[in-house]
Length: 165
Image (tube, rainbow, N blue to C red; front, top):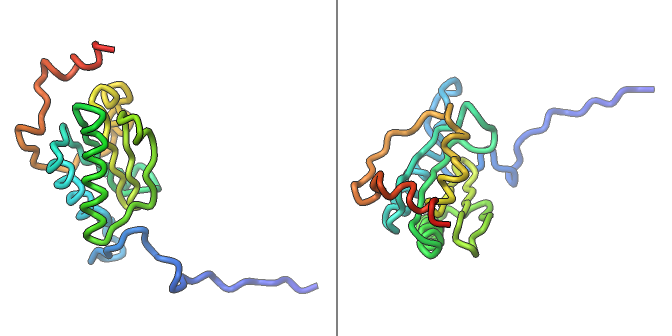
């Protein structure tokens, strides 16, 4: 009886080597930054729709399903949906479509857009405080981003919405 050996699998034309549409120019030993440019563009689009308290997390060393996670808040159910829709539409115009969109998009509490190398979470601010995604990814370095003053929630309003339930 002879033992069959199979040749190593190679990437085919139909199987992408990366889930991102852009390829970084980095040496094989350097950590990949795939998705960072697109995540920063998603941030701009979210801020255009008045997204609040944005945080960009570098999760490359902590998870296997993406490199970056962008977290934003909205003040109302409608604003959460508008922020997510604005990001999706803006990136679609640039040729980038989400792999998936999940969660309670119809209720406006939370929206998730999965672009492969980065994931966008848009929360109603009180839901964001409740689920504390940033606490879950506490070990993830934060990417320094410029946050305009109008994208900040005053301290006296941050916990007010979670008390009114």
